[in-house]
Length: 294
Image (cartoon, rainbow, N blue to C red; front, side):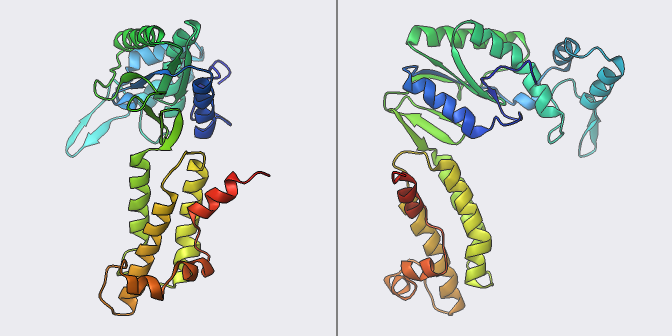
C-alpha cells in the first residue's frame, strides 16, 4: 500500500471514486485537456500469473505466504462439467484480488508518472491527461507498449485519444462524461438508474406508497444524486418526472383504472405536491439547494 502512487485509486483506504474524479477534474482545469482514455480488455480475467508473481516476489520474501498466494491464484475453475486450472486472472469477488490487481499495474503507474504525464487510475479504469496532442500520442504509445509486453490488451474500440475541451471528443470515467469543459452524467448511468427504479415500481406490486417511497426509492435516489450532484446541466427534472410516472402507474393499478400513469387525469389526481407530502426525494430540488451559496 505504501508503494502505490497518489494517482492510484480504488480498493485503497480513503481513495474512492469521488477522489479520483476530483483529481481528473483538476488536471483538466489546469489545461491538460488532451486525454488518453484507455480500456484494458478483461483485465481481472487476464493478468498473467507468472508475471504477477514476479511483482509480488519483489515485495514479499516469506516463502510460505508466497505459496498461499500461488494456491489462491491456481484455484480450479468449473464451467458446467469442465474443470481447469487458470494461468491468468484473479478470482472474482475475492478479498485479495483488488490488491494483486493494483500491484500488477503499479509499474505502469510509475512509467507514465516518471514520463511527466498526469494519470488518474481507479482499479483498471484509467485516463492520462496531457497538455497537447503530441504528449497524448506519446502516452498512448507508452501504454500500448507496456500492455503488450505484460500480457494485457487494450480494447481497440474503447481506447481513444481526444481533446475533451471540444464537443464530440470527450471521455467517460467512473460514471461521468467529461466533454466541452463540463462534467456530464453518462447516458449509461442514467439508464442504469431507470432500470433500478423500474425494478422497485412494478405496476403489479403491492405495498404502502409511503413505505415504497421512504424505504425503497429515497435511499437509492439520494445515493445516486450524492454521487452525480457535481454534474453540469443534467436530467434531474426528467428523472423526477419518470419516478412520479412510475408511482402513478402503481396507484392507477391499485384503483383498478386503465392507464399508463402518464395521463392528465392521473397527474391531476396524484399531483407532484401529493408525492412531496409523502416525502419523495426530488433531484431537481436537491440540486437547487446544493447550488445555493452557504
